[in-house]
Image (cartoon, rainbow, N blue to C red; front, side, top):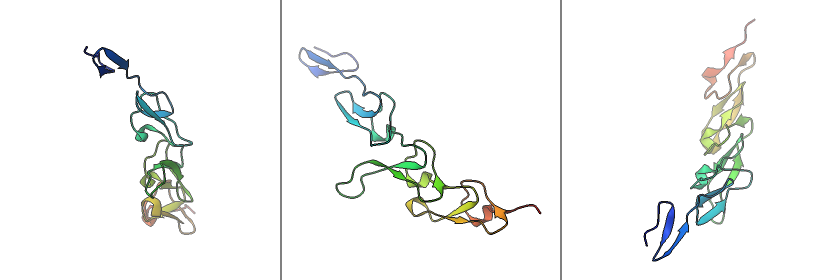
Length: 130
């Protein structure tokens, strides 16, 4: 028998392929939990649908045996909710970045100057009035 949309199977046996619930990802037949500290909307099909909290990002397995996780942004930086890589980490205000991704270093603007959050070079530092 033919299965309707959202079902799978053969012969006369069809099973509903319901979407995974919140906090999980995958198909309705195989759902995996999001990495610790992250969450997903119902129906997320890949781990990329798992949102890590702000100031963290979803880090891939990388090293053998490691698993997906929410990794902290480098010191003195932040990222929005749901960031997918270290490149999403931006320096706090008053700082500017040197390097990129996981190798970003946030350096202080020269004395008497400030910069907005997310500044990418020393040219973003502006002198204070006075």
